[in-house]
Length: 197
Image (cartoon, rainbow, N blue to C red; front, top):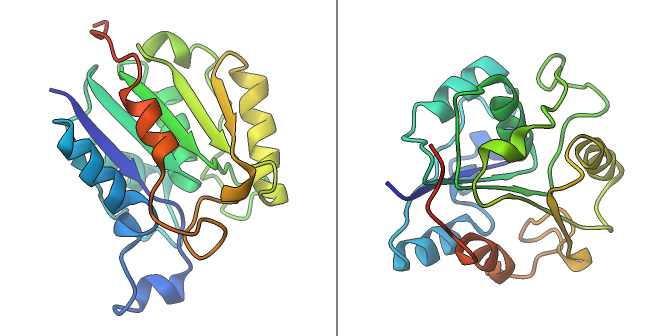
């Protein structure tokens, strides 16, 4: 079944606990993307990760992989969500995807969150993603994001890399001026073929 899962980044605790604020899963470009995917017949999941302000890899990975991920699935992770998908794909050799899209990926290069991203990226991830891995980044993002990008480039140089400088860390109110992210839609819909099993 063709579906997509949108995995959010790490919110600040005070924002997460403020119930007047949008949940991380429906923040930034996620609602727009889910609507656009639905119009194209792609069922989309936007889970809110457990304790995302103080993430535990095992809890987050178990939560994400409980969704119906299969060889027709598209996974889109932003910031911490991108890092989580990279680790899941590294540690779960049984997971195949149609597309993996990493948006402003963050791998906690300063190790502020302990063992969250204590892993080496599997360079063979591309072999398990039928329609490729795309990394959206901004050359104007912060130092940690650019350090994370360097780690990913070294591990999977053959992924597709797209620099959109004006999007910063791909957050509304940060540098994105609205929820539309047409470049993401272009990547999701371009060249989809029957996946391998």
